[in-house]
Length: 634
Image (cartoon, rainbow, N blue to C red):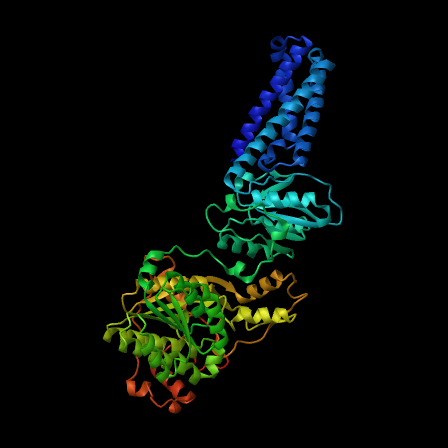
């Protein structure tokens, strides 16, 4: 119920209750009620209403009211009675407020006003019981708090918040006292929930946390979206408070089907909560039409993206799903996860092989003859790629060519290259190798009956070896966290979202497209480091230090693709943009590029080849020249 509606509702009911009280008192004492009404009772009723307002009775959310709130109403009735007697004495209408009338009207006031609120609370509780199978009532016992307690801020003013506040007020041994509630709903501004003031606006979080010396912040919004939780967390981590939150409940009926919230349900936030966002709107039928009953091959199937792709694809019931990788442990864990999906209709197979091994890849294509190939095998760590160009080239380019050619030879229907947004403006070996692979895909699509397309995505939150994984390792060792530059910034996307969007882009592919996903959540890495420290319950620069080192080989302050992104076109799919740029870069003659004897490929060959393909590239973003950077930007 909206705030204005709720206030008007209770004001009207209180007016009725006070009139009925004086009417009953007059009938019992023999006083002429109607003769005394305009000259006395009406004035006294107005005084009582004013006293109720001063005691903030109309700010209480009686949907979740407890004993503390009913005590406030009772005290306000005592005060309103005394105020009305005082007003009658001042005005000179003592005749209509004789002791019997005063006593009887007070008794009737107390009975009627409290009964109305109790009935209202009971009715709302019954409605909630109808909406949830559990139907458990809220506990509303209030026990005075001890002085040595943790001061708590609760974010959210719904049922979950009421559950947690009631439990904190019930349980003295828990040592927590709710001090304030923050909520985005402006209708609740100035109201109170179980005696706790409600303030509107997440911008109040830092200010109130400092003023009230808050020790702990609880986010009690189980029905909220991931993006909303991430926005709240970014405000919360700027305080020095411990942060805990309720697990999210997905679905439109999240608030009505969830069991009553309890303190034991709270968990510490993780980095996914800070960077997470809701999954995009997706046409699963179109994806299913493409994958159901087909043979699907995922190279790099044990990696962060490849494994998530396998978990996503198998839900659409392909006839056979093959995960190919050199990571034995990763494939073992993936097979264990997918075991429940292995049925007569859907078979999962794992293959230990390298995309660089042409003979082994031919055996795999000959045995399985895939309809759709997702090529996610890659070396992606920029510093490693910059100092090991041969290895990067053999996997990201030579390996891609092996799989790409075999897809054409064995008449695969679609081939999807999983690339990176850095390929839009290649400024290091990793990005240049990826862009080279994209160029080969474009040329292959023009000559083959197989549909070839590229999907670019930003950094994966779950990526092994990325900055998040490094920070988590350093935090587990007690710090410090090492930051290569205070201004460095990155965009992140979850592997779950990337896999879903990649499958959707594959359904859209008609040949030759370059799809870009995201754009992902942008965050400064320094801000990320400070947030991860605070999420771990520590204070940056005091308990765990952050050390600035220097940019690593090939590393940029931020990805140049943000500049190129403005050229993209929207597609029917949410968060998928069609880039489709015609590049100025061209592949040299095949005799220069594809050396059949791998032993002849060395670092010098790769660097010279990349100079031939990208002779004039200059970074457009203002990024600094990096240690180990081969191109002279400035």
